Image 1 (cartoon, protein in one colour):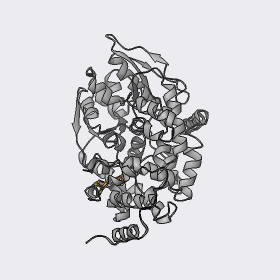
Image 2 (tube, protein in one colour; image 1 turned 90 degrees about the vertical axis):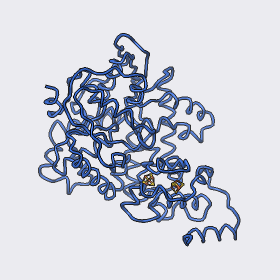
Image 3 (cartoon, helix red, strand yellow; image 1 turned 60 degrees about the vertical axis):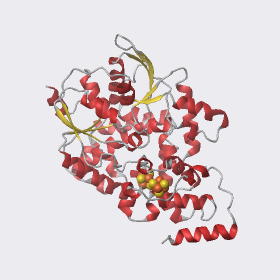
Image 4 (cartoon, rainbow, N blue to C red; image 1 turned 180 degrees about the vertical axis):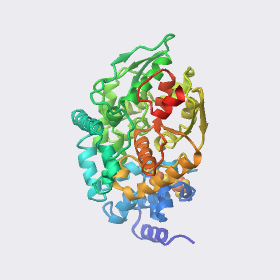
Length: 450
Ligand code: SF4
Ligand code: SF4
């Protein structure tokens, strides 16, 4: 039996003829969906909300309707289903029809007004007010590290005050990342070890550089240990990933153009944050409305490599320091579904002497971080985080390795709040320590290296 909505839609088309599609939506991409539903079992919001409108098929259908003017982009139900999507792209991996769901969703969001006040606030303060402005970001990072040095997050956790503060659970982040105030920036050029193999650029990032500079340093060490000179442009800005995934297309396009300029003259650009890498590999999409830059965007995207993808595909030199640990790898959505990279991070971990790699159930399911989703839709994000924490505990892993700052923060927070002392680190952290870096090793890693 066809669904009533489909009959309504077809009857309306018969009656009124096919309307002109809305500007900014590529109808060829929308029509790729054949509504087979094979993606539904892989969709976390369909699992959480049990509603066809919150499934990939339902969303593709609604986007088609909105694009043809049969429902308004500002219809509150449409807005809800569009913004309740994690944009995790698990449906792309499941789809037999090659639907580019992430691209369609970003086009649709660019036309869809924010869903609620929380969403508007996050866009105004974070996506447009902070990320595109390096100086403001530096100040925010400095204040954040100062708060950590004053042990304010620990105090919030111990007193449980985070439960009553707005966004308190984020203020109470467990101690991950690089916390020391005033740490030096990465050098503009670090020479690779002999025999040298080439020269690469490294994206320092925005949040990544403020909260995970130690991870950036260890990524650089992994690259130099493999014979690559590492260039880190000092004027590097946010690549536009978070604004783009949220539908802030103008901000995203501006940041994409600036990022391309920053890396002029480099043939390879290494990225260690999955969301950023995925975004930068699709700059032709971000710059779709800029005829002059679109082709340059596609050419730039071909230079972008995830750190583990680049190291493993180029024949990584095995590190020698032993880390005796049982590690599970959590696939960031924008690495496994956005970039189809799942083998290389695991292979990199297996090459570290002493590491036993175990698989956890649903390692490729979204943890609920999803860009700014855990800020705009905390209730649904909590459900996904709960599934993730349960699978991590069941895996018996001592440490979780991932490859995206948002996932590392979100999963650390979930584990810590559930009372589990399991550090969450970046694959490049473990690699960097195995290549000789001695900073910021969690006590468990320190003991495992003794
Ligand atoms: S997105 Fe793909 S898998 Fe899902 S309904 Fe459409 S064609 Fe089928
Ligand atoms: S992107 Fe993720 S949450 Fe959104 S429809 Fe696809 S599978 Fe579901």
